[in-house]
Image (tube, rainbow, N blue to C red; front, top):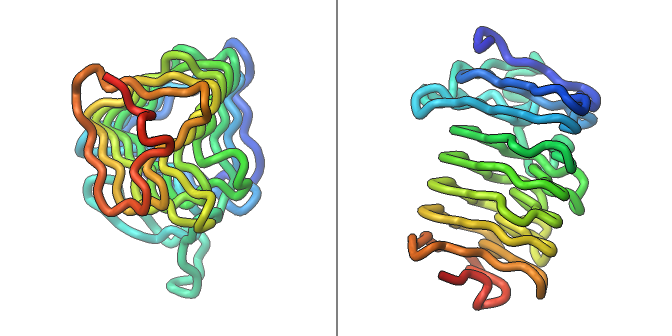
Length: 220
């Protein structure tokens, strides 16, 4: 339902063999201890006019393209959201195929080693989604061989200063196309075994301290 925000105050787990379907317009707000662990599958089905939002319980903003957000924690303007306010979304080995379509994920990654969205030992599809103001990483791919990211945005990942990336890859290969990286400490970073394929479809980098590490991370 998109009528009211869902508040997640602990770890919500999708069991193996099960699928969590999140409809357009849904808002999921996480407290400091809130997290989502997907051992099964997740299907996030936002639209251009009704996105699905994963955010901090302190996030009171309203955006017509996102949904009618509310003062969930009931403190008016006493608190404001910040990077690392909540834990993360973690997808494990049995999560393929899963998808995030027209999703917004912001203010997450309380644990700086996990990122706001971690995909481990699996591959998923990310389309038309925005990752912003998360602590450490927006998306962390670990042993992910064929995740696809298209028409998405990675922005404002700046904390901690020397350890913050929009997209982080370890032993992973991903296709990234028509995607914007802006205002990050590092737009995309990969270890020595990882690479990004753009398939000849360009991506946009602007306002990052460093666009990619290493320089040749993105290949045709």
